[in-house]
Image (cartoon, helix red, strand yellow):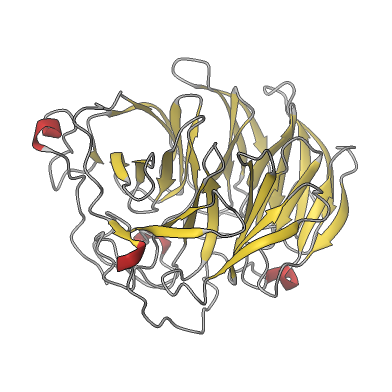
Length: 431
């Protein structure tokens, strides 16, 4: 199931410009990425940004929940400082600790269990108008709180159960108009599996689209009425046998390219060749017409741990995870757990080019996001790191990534019908 990590392949003329660290070194990094700041800690999870401040979540463990019951919360960084500077913290021991900015000055946290909100699944709001002195406002219980996403331009937050039949597959739409008294405005249940996560973005027709990813596949919604998402298309993962578990997604700023990440927690390869069913890949769709998504192809995990361990051994995973696009571009950054992070040029979606990669020593990267012209990384074992990407030469162009397989060549293999929930993402019962 494992393999030899594949390096970034570049044209000979670029070899001197983008050299990778020599094989066997503790760190694997292309020369066009510079680490400008690092704050070590365990349990780094999701990231959010309000434009200036970055909010970094931390759960109550290292590679699994409840390993450090009193650990967890949020660190707040000023991204305009050079280097970025820690300005505030929120102590909130708990699981998952997904974070989102609902509106300026209002941070929302989702948790399966929390020491600072409702004891079980819930959402907690914080006033961060003064990031040095964040203040807890209120909490509300929901069926299951694995992830959350703010709906742009509204006071609604979608709180998703995890996409594995958690919370009976129910997504709670939480109204935070009164942040001191958040309330569940509506419950939606797209299918029995539910959404693992939701993503929102406007397309070229100025329609706010929503994407629900989960065990049943990918659903694209018209979000004109955020309390009543209207499904306009769906891609079943039971039809696309290359996707084991549709974990999350990113939509390009022009609203035409959708990238779905497959968190293949039960088996995947780390060699870029799809030698274990192609699971764990990034899957690219043209959604110029969201009513009819067109599959473009898949980017395999290009590198990572040499051998895939137990399904619950997240330290060996190289499957794709959190991701986003840089503003006004088709430049994607994504996390690969033990495979570190990659930067992809998807200007031509059928010709993805890996511009850079970074694998820190012992990396288990949960999140890689592009914020304010830098790449922010939140790692389960290394904490927060901030990377600066140097300009990438335009001529000659980088070659198409060897980890890419066009849709016409994607091999359709049987996959296990029984998809057990991984230990990492299965909420433990609360005493």
